[in-house]
Image (cartoon, rainbow, N blue to C red; front, side, top):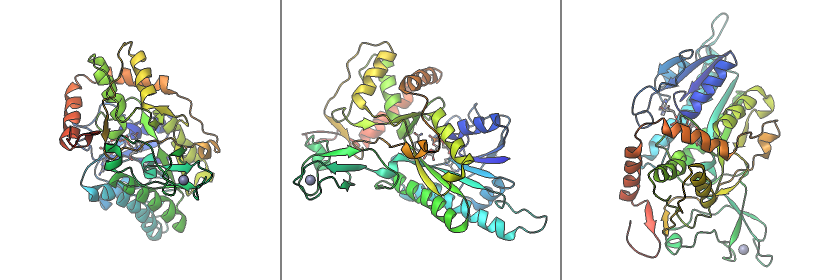
Length: 391
Ligand SMILES: NC(=O)c1ccc[n+]([C@@H]2O[C@H](COP(=O)([O-])OP(=O)(O)OC[C@H]3O[C@@H](n4cnc5c(N)ncnc54)[C@H](O)[C@@H]3O)[C@@H](O)[C@H]2O)c1
Ligand SMILES: [Zn+2]
């Protein structure tokens, strides 16, 4: 069986490639070696046993030739992060997913006796979506006197004005009381930035166009994925990289807001396994699944655990800063995917062990860390409560 992994030079894609090779698949990679992800060019971890095509998923001809003879597509290539070029997100992430389905349909239509056009043999498409599609997530008002009592509410992103006052929580639109978050469930979405919007469009292009045209497709909404080979630059690696860098330099981790915001970290091995499970199980077809740890951890707890792992005795700093665009809580409900027999097997300890080994092998990454911090401050993404000054 032949598999195509777009973005197969990247973090998640390359681990999927390795697993497929282990399972005996013929594997082809399509990756444009985006310079932001691969500043040193083609990464050393790309297996020699996989066929590598350097090319762009936005280019229909390249994509079609990469799909020639392929039976399963893992679409991992993506444009990520907080960038102002909105159209590129949609183009790289969503248009490419539509193109994959377009090529399959055209391939099926133009295949005849003895002729198998590119795309015509594809039996399944799995796209990488993201927890980001939930935006600020889902909440409930616990006030029995409120008209919205117990209803699921999907709040708008918190306003700068609210954050400026150091009010971090989410408040009921009816009674203005504090609301309680509930775990993110697949039936919802509430994206508000370009990345999240493009990921929702990507998964819909896959699952809905797939259903309409009988192309079995699945979308996996990953939580924050961690493990070796993870980009040192994207938003997902942010907290671990920055905390690690500061701690290794003897500096305290800087925690935004009050540090009680909840997150969900998942190990790369569990994500690869999720891809394998949905590839093999037809009950997954045309469905969307969360892939996460199912466990919530606050940023404070995370900093404490990492500090202990690194053997440091340093207290984190909570200077009353916040980042515009951050969500308060993001923890996925993973019961749907568990229903297919998958479950997370690797916890935070394992994530930290792997990450620390990985970061130690990356040479001098202090430079990247400084650049990222500087860029965030210059863009005014990091702000301070109370004052009117960007810091
Ligand atoms: N890392 C996470 O925590 C996380 C969380 C949620 C969702 N995701 C999604 O998982 C997928 C994989 O993420 P990752 O962390 O491995 O990212 P990554 O940046 O390590 O890998 C992405 C790969 O895609 C390639 N790429 C980018 N633009 C391309 C283009 N136009 N044409 C061809 N290749 C292109 C890059 O060169 C890179 O090798 C993405 O779709 C991402 O949105 C990741
Ligand atoms: Zn209320």
